[in-house]
Length: 276
Ligand code: NDP
Image (cartoon, rainbow, N blue to C red; front, side, top):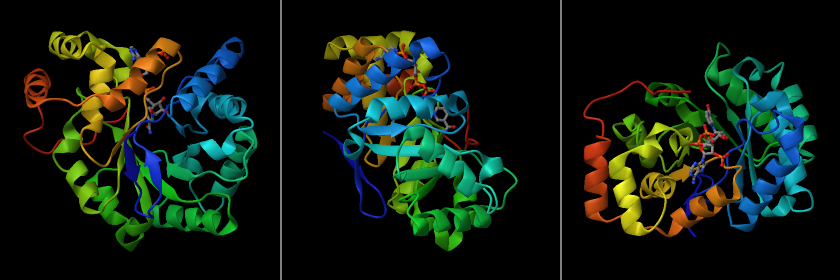
Protein backbone atom coordinates (compact mmCIF):
# COMPACT_ATOMS: atom_id res chain seq x y z
CA UNK A 1 0.00 0.00 0.00
CA UNK A 2 1.36 3.44 -0.88
CA UNK A 3 1.60 6.14 1.74
CA UNK A 4 2.44 9.80 1.98
CA UNK A 5 4.04 11.52 4.94
CA UNK A 6 2.71 14.86 6.09
CA UNK A 7 5.14 17.56 7.26
CA UNK A 8 4.27 16.78 10.90
CA UNK A 9 5.38 13.17 10.36
CA UNK A 10 1.92 11.59 10.14
CA UNK A 11 1.60 8.83 7.55
CA UNK A 12 -1.58 8.67 5.48
CA UNK A 13 -2.67 6.42 2.60
CA UNK A 14 -1.79 7.92 -0.78
CA UNK A 15 -5.17 6.86 -2.14
CA UNK A 16 -8.31 8.04 -0.37
CA UNK A 17 -11.95 8.78 -1.13
CA UNK A 18 -13.81 11.95 -2.10
CA UNK A 19 -17.41 12.76 -1.19
CA UNK A 20 -18.48 15.65 -3.44
CA UNK A 21 -22.14 15.17 -4.50
CA UNK A 22 -22.77 12.62 -1.77
CA UNK A 23 -25.64 13.45 0.57
CA UNK A 24 -27.54 15.42 -2.05
CA UNK A 25 -30.48 13.01 -2.24
CA UNK A 26 -31.82 11.38 0.88
CA UNK A 27 -32.71 8.22 -1.02
CA UNK A 28 -29.05 7.66 -2.01
CA UNK A 29 -27.46 8.21 1.37
CA UNK A 30 -27.46 4.62 2.57
CA UNK A 31 -25.79 3.36 -0.63
CA UNK A 32 -23.26 6.20 -0.47
CA UNK A 33 -22.33 5.32 3.11
CA UNK A 34 -22.01 1.68 2.08
CA UNK A 35 -19.68 2.67 -0.76
CA UNK A 36 -17.49 4.64 1.65
CA UNK A 37 -17.44 1.64 4.00
CA UNK A 38 -16.36 -0.66 1.16
CA UNK A 39 -13.63 1.87 0.39
CA UNK A 40 -12.45 1.74 4.01
CA UNK A 41 -12.41 -2.07 3.81
CA UNK A 42 -10.21 -1.73 0.72
CA UNK A 43 -7.78 0.50 2.60
CA UNK A 44 -8.99 3.83 1.23
CA UNK A 45 -9.16 5.17 4.75
CA UNK A 46 -8.47 8.84 4.03
CA UNK A 47 -11.88 10.46 3.50
CA UNK A 48 -12.22 13.97 2.10
CA UNK A 49 -15.35 16.03 2.66
CA UNK A 50 -16.38 19.68 3.18
CA UNK A 51 -19.04 21.77 4.86
CA UNK A 52 -19.97 22.87 1.33
CA UNK A 53 -20.86 19.43 -0.04
CA UNK A 54 -24.65 19.06 -0.03
CA UNK A 55 -24.73 21.82 2.59
CA UNK A 56 -23.28 19.46 5.18
CA UNK A 57 -25.10 16.42 3.78
CA UNK A 58 -21.86 14.75 2.70
CA UNK A 59 -20.50 15.05 6.25
CA UNK A 60 -23.66 13.31 7.49
CA UNK A 61 -23.03 10.47 5.03
CA UNK A 62 -19.48 10.25 6.40
CA UNK A 63 -20.95 9.95 9.90
CA UNK A 64 -23.02 6.96 8.82
CA UNK A 65 -20.04 5.39 7.03
CA UNK A 66 -17.59 5.64 9.91
CA UNK A 67 -19.95 4.73 12.74
CA UNK A 68 -18.02 2.37 15.02
CA UNK A 69 -14.79 2.73 13.04
CA UNK A 70 -13.59 6.26 13.71
CA UNK A 71 -10.10 5.09 14.60
CA UNK A 72 -9.68 3.45 11.16
CA UNK A 73 -10.07 6.65 9.18
CA UNK A 74 -8.19 9.88 8.55
CA UNK A 75 -10.86 12.55 8.16
CA UNK A 76 -10.33 15.65 6.06
CA UNK A 77 -12.91 18.43 5.93
CA UNK A 78 -12.89 21.94 4.52
CA UNK A 79 -14.12 25.32 5.68
CA UNK A 80 -15.71 27.84 3.30
CA UNK A 81 -13.51 30.91 2.72
CA UNK A 82 -16.21 33.19 4.17
CA UNK A 83 -16.18 31.11 7.36
CA UNK A 84 -12.38 31.01 7.62
CA UNK A 85 -12.18 33.98 9.98
CA UNK A 86 -11.42 34.49 13.67
CA UNK A 87 -15.12 35.09 14.34
CA UNK A 88 -16.70 32.32 12.26
CA UNK A 89 -14.36 29.34 11.94
CA UNK A 90 -15.09 27.81 15.36
CA UNK A 91 -18.80 27.63 14.64
CA UNK A 92 -18.20 26.07 11.20
CA UNK A 93 -15.82 23.49 12.62
CA UNK A 94 -18.15 22.58 15.49
CA UNK A 95 -21.01 22.11 13.01
CA UNK A 96 -18.81 19.82 10.87
CA UNK A 97 -17.82 17.80 13.95
CA UNK A 98 -21.47 17.44 14.92
CA UNK A 99 -22.52 16.33 11.44
CA UNK A 100 -19.71 13.75 11.29
CA UNK A 101 -20.31 12.61 14.87
CA UNK A 102 -16.64 13.01 15.81
CA UNK A 103 -14.69 14.97 18.39
CA UNK A 104 -11.87 16.05 16.13
CA UNK A 105 -11.06 16.41 12.43
CA UNK A 106 -7.70 14.97 11.43
CA UNK A 107 -7.03 17.64 8.80
CA UNK A 108 -9.01 20.83 8.26
CA UNK A 109 -8.49 22.78 5.04
CA UNK A 110 -9.28 26.27 3.77
CA UNK A 111 -11.44 25.32 0.74
CA UNK A 112 -10.17 28.18 -1.42
CA UNK A 113 -8.88 31.66 -0.85
CA UNK A 114 -11.46 34.37 -0.18
CA UNK A 115 -11.32 37.81 1.35
CA UNK A 116 -10.23 36.80 4.87
CA UNK A 117 -6.47 37.41 5.20
CA UNK A 118 -4.49 34.14 5.20
CA UNK A 119 -2.78 35.14 8.46
CA UNK A 120 -6.17 35.42 10.19
CA UNK A 121 -7.24 32.01 8.86
CA UNK A 122 -4.02 30.47 10.16
CA UNK A 123 -4.62 32.05 13.57
CA UNK A 124 -8.14 30.57 13.64
CA UNK A 125 -6.78 27.14 12.61
CA UNK A 126 -4.17 27.27 15.37
CA UNK A 127 -6.84 28.06 17.93
CA UNK A 128 -8.81 24.98 16.84
CA UNK A 129 -5.65 22.86 17.09
CA UNK A 130 -5.08 24.17 20.63
CA UNK A 131 -8.68 23.32 21.54
CA UNK A 132 -8.32 19.81 20.09
CA UNK A 133 -11.13 20.32 17.55
CA UNK A 134 -8.74 19.73 14.65
CA UNK A 135 -5.46 17.86 14.69
CA UNK A 136 -3.78 19.82 11.89
CA UNK A 137 -4.59 22.20 9.05
CA UNK A 138 -3.92 22.79 5.37
CA UNK A 139 -5.18 24.64 2.33
CA UNK A 140 -6.82 24.00 -1.01
CA UNK A 141 -6.69 25.71 -4.41
CA UNK A 142 -3.69 27.82 -3.42
CA UNK A 143 -1.04 28.48 -6.05
CA UNK A 144 2.67 28.93 -5.32
CA UNK A 145 2.43 32.69 -4.69
CA UNK A 146 -0.38 32.15 -2.14
CA UNK A 147 1.63 29.44 -0.39
CA UNK A 148 4.63 31.75 -0.24
CA UNK A 149 2.41 34.35 1.38
CA UNK A 150 1.90 31.96 4.30
CA UNK A 151 5.48 32.77 5.30
CA UNK A 152 6.64 30.96 8.42
CA UNK A 153 3.19 29.33 8.81
CA UNK A 154 3.89 27.28 5.66
CA UNK A 155 5.91 24.93 7.88
CA UNK A 156 2.69 23.97 9.70
CA UNK A 157 0.55 23.61 6.56
CA UNK A 158 0.07 19.87 5.92
CA UNK A 159 -1.20 19.81 2.34
CA UNK A 160 -2.50 21.83 -0.61
CA UNK A 161 -5.50 20.11 -2.21
CA UNK A 162 -5.60 21.04 -5.90
CA UNK A 163 -7.00 20.02 -9.27
CA UNK A 164 -4.44 17.58 -10.66
CA UNK A 165 -5.05 14.89 -13.23
CA UNK A 166 -3.90 13.91 -16.74
CA UNK A 167 -5.93 16.74 -18.28
CA UNK A 168 -4.82 19.27 -15.67
CA UNK A 169 -1.05 18.85 -15.37
CA UNK A 170 -0.22 22.51 -14.73
CA UNK A 171 0.89 21.85 -11.11
CA UNK A 172 3.79 19.74 -12.44
CA UNK A 173 5.54 22.90 -13.64
CA UNK A 174 5.95 24.64 -10.31
CA UNK A 175 3.46 23.70 -7.60
CA UNK A 176 4.50 20.04 -7.24
CA UNK A 177 8.23 20.87 -7.10
CA UNK A 178 7.56 23.72 -4.65
CA UNK A 179 5.56 21.45 -2.33
CA UNK A 180 8.13 18.64 -2.66
CA UNK A 181 10.78 21.16 -1.61
CA UNK A 182 8.75 21.78 1.55
CA UNK A 183 8.09 18.04 2.05
CA UNK A 184 4.37 18.80 1.83
CA UNK A 185 2.20 16.32 -0.08
CA UNK A 186 -0.26 17.65 -2.64
CA UNK A 187 -3.75 16.18 -2.57
CA UNK A 188 -5.01 15.67 -6.14
CA UNK A 189 -8.73 16.27 -6.52
CA UNK A 190 -10.83 15.10 -9.48
CA UNK A 191 -8.02 12.62 -10.25
CA UNK A 192 -10.16 10.63 -12.71
CA UNK A 193 -11.47 13.77 -14.42
CA UNK A 194 -14.89 13.33 -12.82
CA UNK A 195 -15.39 10.19 -14.88
CA UNK A 196 -15.74 12.25 -18.08
CA UNK A 197 -14.04 12.61 -21.45
CA UNK A 198 -10.57 11.86 -20.13
CA UNK A 199 -11.50 8.24 -19.49
CA UNK A 200 -12.48 7.80 -23.15
CA UNK A 201 -9.08 8.86 -24.45
CA UNK A 202 -7.69 6.18 -26.81
CA UNK A 203 -4.09 6.44 -25.52
CA UNK A 204 -5.23 6.08 -21.92
CA UNK A 205 -7.37 3.13 -22.92
CA UNK A 206 -4.46 1.48 -24.74
CA UNK A 207 -2.25 1.73 -21.64
CA UNK A 208 -5.12 0.38 -19.51
CA UNK A 209 -5.60 -2.57 -21.88
CA UNK A 210 -1.90 -3.46 -21.56
CA UNK A 211 -2.28 -3.56 -17.77
CA UNK A 212 -5.59 -5.46 -17.96
CA UNK A 213 -7.43 -2.70 -16.10
CA UNK A 214 -9.69 0.28 -16.74
CA UNK A 215 -8.66 3.83 -17.74
CA UNK A 216 -9.51 5.29 -14.32
CA UNK A 217 -6.99 2.98 -12.62
CA UNK A 218 -4.28 4.20 -15.01
CA UNK A 219 -5.29 7.83 -14.43
CA UNK A 220 -4.92 7.23 -10.69
CA UNK A 221 -1.63 5.35 -11.09
CA UNK A 222 -0.41 8.36 -13.06
CA UNK A 223 -1.18 10.82 -10.25
CA UNK A 224 0.32 8.45 -7.67
CA UNK A 225 3.55 7.65 -9.48
CA UNK A 226 5.13 10.83 -8.10
CA UNK A 227 6.02 10.61 -4.43
CA UNK A 228 4.18 13.18 -2.35
CA UNK A 229 0.88 13.02 -4.23
CA UNK A 230 -2.30 11.81 -2.55
CA UNK A 231 -5.34 11.14 -4.79
CA UNK A 232 -8.93 11.29 -3.56
CA UNK A 233 -11.25 9.85 -6.25
CA UNK A 234 -14.95 9.82 -5.46
CA UNK A 235 -16.72 6.56 -6.30
CA UNK A 236 -20.22 5.49 -5.38
CA UNK A 237 -20.12 2.41 -7.58
CA UNK A 238 -18.52 -0.67 -5.91
CA UNK A 239 -16.90 -1.79 -9.19
CA UNK A 240 -15.29 1.65 -9.49
CA UNK A 241 -14.01 1.42 -5.91
CA UNK A 242 -12.38 -1.94 -6.57
CA UNK A 243 -10.77 -0.69 -9.78
CA UNK A 244 -9.50 2.42 -8.01
CA UNK A 245 -8.07 0.45 -5.10
CA UNK A 246 -6.18 -1.76 -7.57
CA UNK A 247 -4.46 1.34 -9.00
CA UNK A 248 -2.11 1.29 -5.99
CA UNK A 249 -0.42 -1.83 -7.38
CA UNK A 250 0.10 -0.56 -10.93
CA UNK A 251 3.65 0.36 -11.88
CA UNK A 252 3.67 2.49 -15.02
CA UNK A 253 6.51 1.77 -17.44
CA UNK A 254 8.57 4.34 -19.32
CA UNK A 255 6.57 3.43 -22.43
CA UNK A 256 3.26 3.98 -20.59
CA UNK A 257 4.44 7.38 -19.35
CA UNK A 258 5.67 8.40 -22.81
CA UNK A 259 2.34 7.49 -24.40
CA UNK A 260 0.44 9.39 -21.70
CA UNK A 261 2.75 12.40 -22.21
CA UNK A 262 1.97 12.55 -25.91
CA UNK A 263 -1.80 12.32 -25.32
CA UNK A 264 -1.76 14.67 -22.30
CA UNK A 265 1.31 16.91 -22.73
CA UNK A 266 3.04 18.11 -19.57
CA UNK A 267 3.20 21.90 -19.04
CA UNK A 268 6.08 23.80 -20.72
CA UNK A 269 5.47 27.03 -18.82
CA UNK A 270 3.67 28.35 -15.77
CA UNK A 271 -0.10 27.88 -15.89
CA UNK A 272 -2.36 29.58 -13.40
CA UNK A 273 -3.75 26.97 -11.03
CA UNK A 274 -7.09 25.77 -12.41
CA UNK A 275 -9.94 25.05 -10.02
CA UNK A 276 -13.39 23.52 -10.28
P1 NDP B 1 -13.31 12.38 -9.57
O1 NDP B 1 -12.24 12.59 -10.57
O2 NDP B 1 -12.98 11.68 -8.33
O3 NDP B 1 -14.51 11.65 -10.32
C1 NDP B 1 -15.67 11.17 -9.68
C2 NDP B 1 -16.57 10.59 -10.77
O4 NDP B 1 -15.84 9.59 -11.48
C3 NDP B 1 -17.82 9.95 -10.23
O5 NDP B 1 -18.85 10.23 -11.14
C4 NDP B 1 -17.49 8.46 -10.24
O6 NDP B 1 -18.63 7.67 -10.52
C5 NDP B 1 -16.54 8.36 -11.41
N1 NDP B 1 -15.55 7.29 -11.20
C6 NDP B 1 -14.83 7.03 -10.08
N2 NDP B 1 -14.06 5.95 -10.24
C7 NDP B 1 -14.29 5.51 -11.50
C8 NDP B 1 -13.81 4.41 -12.26
N3 NDP B 1 -12.93 3.53 -11.73
N4 NDP B 1 -14.24 4.28 -13.54
C9 NDP B 1 -15.13 5.13 -14.06
N5 NDP B 1 -15.63 6.19 -13.39
C10 NDP B 1 -15.22 6.37 -12.13
O7 NDP B 1 -13.95 13.83 -9.29
P2 NDP B 1 -14.37 14.67 -8.02
O8 NDP B 1 -14.60 16.03 -8.54
O9 NDP B 1 -15.43 14.00 -7.25
O10 NDP B 1 -13.02 14.74 -7.15
C11 NDP B 1 -12.72 13.84 -6.11
C12 NDP B 1 -12.89 14.47 -4.76
O11 NDP B 1 -12.02 15.57 -4.60
C13 NDP B 1 -14.28 15.09 -4.52
O12 NDP B 1 -15.26 14.11 -4.32
C14 NDP B 1 -13.98 15.99 -3.36
O13 NDP B 1 -13.92 15.24 -2.16
C15 NDP B 1 -12.63 16.55 -3.75
N6 NDP B 1 -12.72 17.82 -4.51
C16 NDP B 1 -12.17 18.95 -3.93
C17 NDP B 1 -12.25 20.16 -4.59
C18 NDP B 1 -11.66 21.37 -3.94
O14 NDP B 1 -11.94 22.49 -4.39
N7 NDP B 1 -10.86 21.23 -2.91
C19 NDP B 1 -12.90 20.32 -5.90
C20 NDP B 1 -13.37 19.06 -6.45
C21 NDP B 1 -13.27 17.87 -5.77
P3 NDP B 1 -19.43 6.83 -9.37
O15 NDP B 1 -19.63 7.78 -8.22
O16 NDP B 1 -20.66 6.41 -10.07
O17 NDP B 1 -18.57 5.65 -8.98
